[in-house]
Length: 53
Image 1: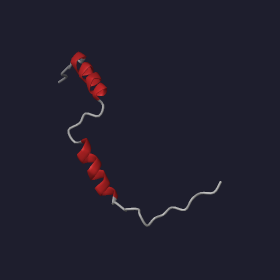
Image 2: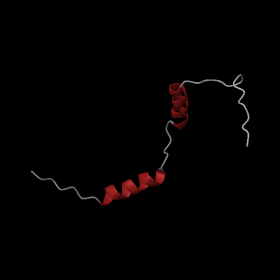
Image 3: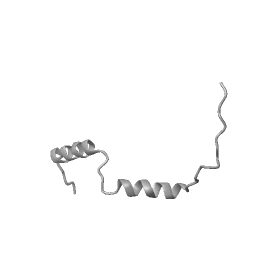
Image 4: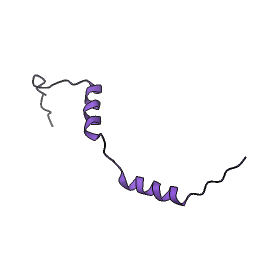
């Protein structure tokens, strides 16, 4: 099977830190794993704290 040659004339190069900044901006103020947060809340609610001196 032969592979096609990529036409690199139309490609745009974006630095990795700029790409990460765009992703971070899109995900800002979002909760990615709400079920994990609910599990943690339940765990913390049932947890008992013992102070040892």
